[in-house]
Structures are given as C-alpha cells and as structure tokens.
Length: 208
Image (cartoon, rainbow, N blue to C red; front, side, top):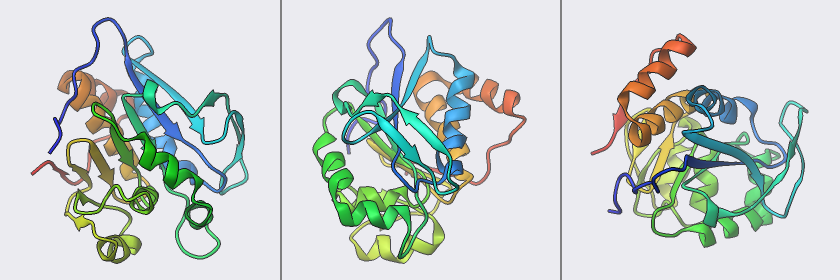
C-alpha cells in the first residue's frame, strides 16, 4: 500500500482540489470545505475544479457555482470527489455515462497524490477503475454495487487506504475533512476545527 501520508514540501500549504460537476450534491462538498476553511490558507489551499476548463456548475438544488480553476491534478496533493445522488437521472449517473470525469480521474493517479471521495462520489472513482481491490466505502445504498465492481467494502464512517480515502453518506464529509486535517496537519489542528464547528466526529476511521 502507498505511503499513508506523503511528505509536504516545506513552506507551502496542503493543496486540495474538490471536483464539481452538474448535479453534484451540496452537502457532499460543503462539509469538508467548511472544515478546511477553518484551517486557514497559509496551511491548506483549496479550490473548486472542473474537467474541461473554467465554467459554472449547477448543483442538484439549482445553485450555480463558478469554478475558476482548471483541472490540474499535477498541482494537487489531495483531490476530493463529492457525490451527486445515485441511480437513474442523477448527476452522478450522467457523469459515469459521459465518461470524461472517470477518465480524467484515472489519468490523474501518481505517487504522492491522495484521491478521496464523499458519499456516492466513490462510485465515480469506481468507474475510473481506482477502487478495484481497494478498501473503501460509500453511501449505504450503493455499497453492493461498489462491492460488485471489485472493491473491498470496509466498515467505517471514513476508510483510509493510503492514497485512497473514502467516507459514507452525506454528512460524513465533515468527518472526512477533519480526518484529512489530522492526517496531514496533526491532531491539534483537527481538534481546533471540531471546536470551531462545535462538532464531534461520529463513527470510526478505518485505517487497518
């Protein structure tokens, strides 16, 4: 298994890219975005990215979000893929059928890059061939499909498999964010984020 915590270059922040697409679920990216914002830009720099260049993305609830940053996985330490519902007609299903985002995620893999997913976003990683044979999780309604596609479904609100970190449904994105802060920036910073949010982490982080 790849190194659990790739070394960061001294003097620069952890670079986190969150991938957005039409139909993405708001809570699937809002949780970790809020956590990372507490840490501060000098330690963690985050941005929204889309495949295909800068554009506006329409979320599942109709919000419009401008993604100014281009798809540039070579300049990220962590890429996070939020979910977009599940089943026929969902934003997630449309992206899987288009194939552009799964292909981009598959091509993004390299040493030192952590790929993460929230909720059904794991199924986009699965469509990219990234979860086959790997320990991971997703929203409970998609677990059997994830297993059928070759993943080693593991118990835990967050499942850390080195360069692949996934979490369960919807609000577990908050826990994913806090765990990544702890993993890269230390437990004191993670505890500070919890205190600011007045949030106590739920469930377990499976790192076995």
